[in-house]
Image (cartoon, rainbow, N blue to C red; front, side, top):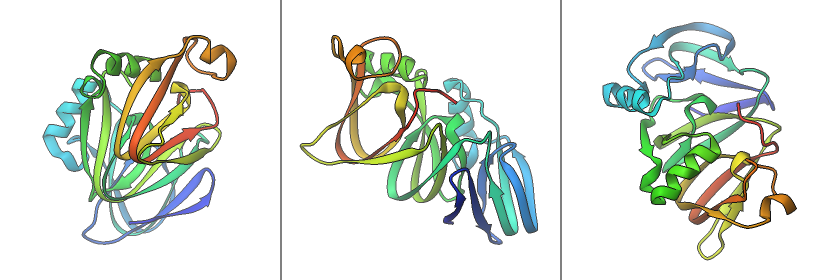
Length: 216
């Protein structure tokens, strides 16, 4: 179900009978209609396997199952919100950045070492994602949170995008990403972790970058 952006820090979703959605607990600001909110203990659409994966990943951000008929307004902590529409591809994002998402999306986790080996794991530490990141796959909408607003940068074949690790929010599509060092890069142009790292994303898709080096 699509989200309607009320302003940069609030979105509204229409809830219809027979369709679930999931939200971070505490994200509901107001609602109209006959809508129920139930604590979710099965890790979203991925069921028990997703829940176990989230525990292994240390991503214990609690979710609510939202059902019924009506409209719900979401927001959390005054963070800026970016709506991302997936059309069969996979979104890679930290669990604590998820505000709300369609129940049609399959939720899982990915080991950071599977993209970039040791440097992939180092990348998880530099970005604050740890050894795992959350994945959402399928057709549907996702509302993610960020500091200072978000810009979407397309990633196209033969044209890699380089991102400060602390400004990285999420990416989707057939995108490979690796962490590389660049002596003096941070001191000259970056604002990130205090070390000369940058993320290089290549392939076909998009990366979302926030206007801040703050973590949520």
